[in-house]
Length: 260
Image 1: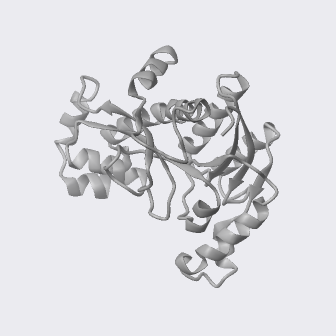
Image 2: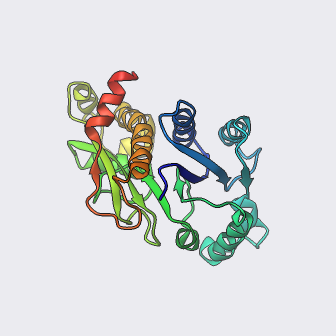
Image 3: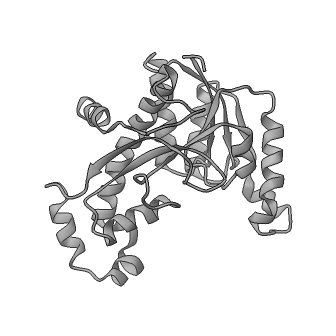
């Protein structure tokens, strides 16, 4: 693979995490920190579905990057609202058809909320998942709840190669951080005032401990993606023959100190 990376980008563009990952990656490219070009962005939502999606789409357009949108929600509605498992292959094949003129080295799934086995077979794809290797698979919210209710000392994020098994492909990089340092002490004490039932049914994601873990994860996900892309470009990480994942914790923490 050339040191200059040609990247495709898949996202559902539903929130702050998706926007931040893309924006920071573009900034790294513009600042010549990352030798790469994003050849296309695919969003499985249309303009007008939500303000957050609209903001993301507007950002892509402002950078003059080819944008392809194809609403999975509308696709399902147009197919009698059949279960997604019955529509997934047809949808993926249509996505591939829309993207066949774009040639990339690999693609990034950054907040892409669809299970896409055919897509993963067609494109070499990496995915960012907000949990440590071997920990929670699935939604980021569940990963945080597992940290809280299992009383874990650390959490983090990993980047792995996408496969048909969700969040279970070979891990290529990760970073970790403590959730038991002095900045968390009072938050754990507050959490312990409530029952699990009250937290889940009444307080929910407004729980300050939940929000702190999410915020600390987000500020690390962005440099983790960029450092991983740089490592792929330099040959330190091989997508063809992945071996032991690289622990990027030290460089991520240095990045946070330099860019508070």
